Amino acid sequence: MPPPMPFTVALIAALVKIALIVGYIMIAVPMAVWLERKLVADIQARIGPNRVGPFGLLQAFADGIKLLFKEAITPVEVDRLLYFAAPIVVMIPAFAVAAVVPFGPTLHAFGYDHKLVVADLPVGVLFVLAVTSLSVYGIVLSGWSSNSKYSLLGGLRSSAQMVSYELPMGLCAVAAVMIASWRFTEGHGFFSLSLAQIVDAQQGWFWNWTAFNWRFGFLGLLAGLIFFICGLAETNRAPFDLPEAESELVGGYHTEYTGMRFALFFLAEYAAMMNVAASTTVLFFGGWRAIYPDPFPAGSVLSVLHGVLWFGAKIWFIMAVYIWIRGTLPRLRYDQLMEFGWKRLIPASLGIVFVTAIVLTFVFPMRPPAFLIQAAQASTPAPPGNAPAGNAPPVNLPGGLLSGNTPGMGNAPAPNAPAANAPAGNLPAAVSPAGNAPGRTPAETPSVPANVPPPSNVPANAPVTTPHANSPAPSGGR
Image (cartoon, rainbow, N blue to C red):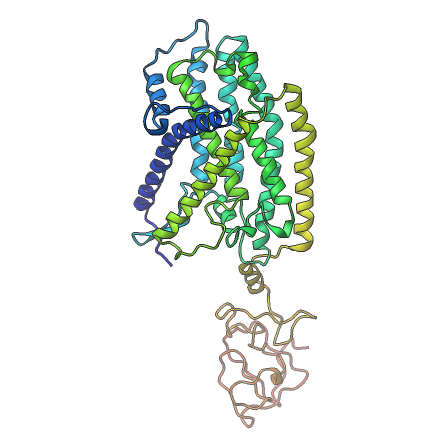
């Protein structure tokens, strides 16, 4: 068991993980732009970027440098506070979601165990759903503050679109959590909404992943497909890119933005795409786990590199599917978008949750965790003497909880209990000292008359004195 991590070490580890995540996003976004331009060019039988750098790899970086030095034009009569705040509001959720996504196994280094996640929240699933829904505020604020009808219509479309597709997305996440909880039905521990714990529930071969879990049929795969479709609408990607439809709204909500303000919207869009890909991977496709059990020792550097590479491969595969859909499907009409969300996806996701609950209830009945069962047994009072109460089995209490100094509890008999139930040491059954009283021989212990009541208010550790046969009864004894 590793020692608890000091605050200084935990702070340094968190800062390193934050720097890695932010740096990766800042580099991965230009690479995602290059990948999209290349794949769409191949789909459309074009060449794509091939001038700046080998294979055009530096084209996206060159575009970023151009936007950095481009003049930023602010239209007249805009709401300046909201106009400048909108790109920042869009960016914050894109980076905040990455803080709770585990991107690799636990690393044992410098004598401590380091989880490859900035914050392993017990409500990680709720955090992802809540934070991703906040990005719509930046889009609505940009459309409202631009003082442009085209931008305003784009912002309103985006808000209605996100309201429609948040519901099935959340329901599919609930189905993923329910399917991942099957490993905890034997009572080995608590199951929470932590994304790291959901990944742990999918360990082993790929048929333990939520999407391919044969115990639930195709429910996990259908939930993953609907979750991914809703992610397309969440990130305003084709065929759900109505908030920025060029043929109708010029550029949509970011029509009046130029320079780096315009670049921030695209940076947030691609970062949101990667967050949706990461969330889909964690909830439905095993997270950082491979299609086979991890062959390397837990906590080793090889195990961490193996998990991080698998996690990155899954994310970029989903990103390629994003781009493939954009180059294949045409943009939907607005009425088709609303009808598909409310009349198709929401009933389908509700049905998945309902059937999953039935399977989980009748096939995998939940049991309390083992340590809660032990705690309940320890807190159950024992009956007097050695006789169990009613039909209940005797409870084996841990040592030291109820000692022999307490009369009438555990294995210590009460003063007036029959001596045959608990002989003391090697004495005959007729002699039974109470508490810590030393034993007497039969000759030293006279018999007690039947009409003499036991003494009252006797301390637990005090020896029991029995009166002589010829002694008068104490006053008030009748």
